[in-house]
Length: 203
Image 1 (tube, rainbow, N blue to C red):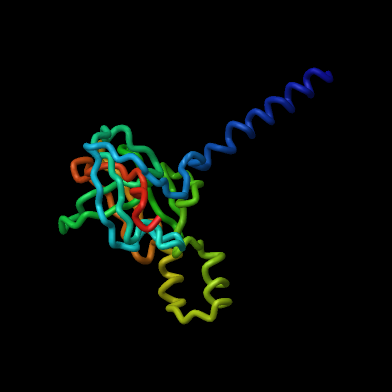
Image 2: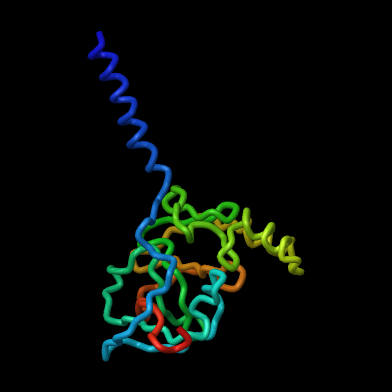
């Protein structure tokens, strides 16, 4: 009898364990900090970046010389990577990979879902200057900063219908949702992976 009760408890716990991560897609590997690259390989690209679309509160990536590796196979890009690409007007931009080829992605009230699973990552929901919705408004009000509260609420409550990516598409979003864009990219438009800042330039 005791063995039977123990077995039931064990199976219940195993069931809970297997189900708990099924509701989320987690990224515990991507570092929010930007690497400093001291040695630049001859075939790497250096690009002076002047957009603030990746600002997480420290003017991240803005007015820095970025180091980009163009030699990586598209299949090697992973969630959380920052990629360098040409947009529809042929401007050179960077954004973070959110969804991979063949996946579905949607946004509900500022929260990203991959294949109907919540994206659990520091970049998994709407941010402005590194703040999420729960921290942004108190911080702005405490600082006495004038801002468009209604407009920012719209940003934090962004909703996007589910999009299914083709086998050669990625979905990317800027770290600052108000200053940047979200879009799906063809592999052919991706120039390379951003490795970090070049050492010695404003760092």
